[in-house]
Length: 121
Image (cartoon, rainbow, N blue to C red; front, side, top):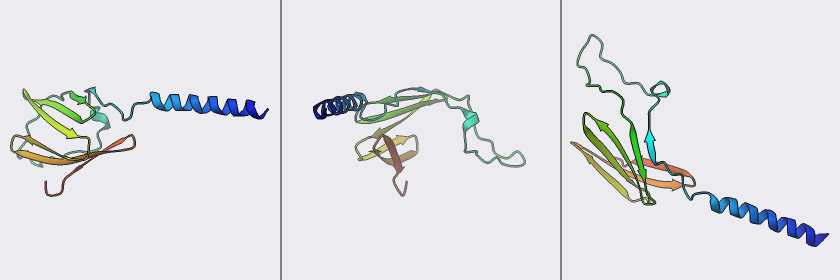
């Protein structure tokens, strides 16, 4: 009886180990993403009285490419591709887009990717 219980326990553990081993180490965000504007929680203030207006364009898709070392996010705006590359090993990622420079640091916390903007940016 005891050996039978041990065998069942061993088979159960083996099945669990196989399930865990089959899961990717981290999620893969690769693909083309389309924003659901209705779900947006941030709104930008408008200028009362018809003051200066921002240039707007049709929403564009966001393309995400991921390797074990980086996540690259690309978005087109008026025939210009804005690209941000994030290092996934905790080192600084410095992205220059026109006159803007943004330094971030990205790390994995379990299955969650956490990215923060470096102070002073």
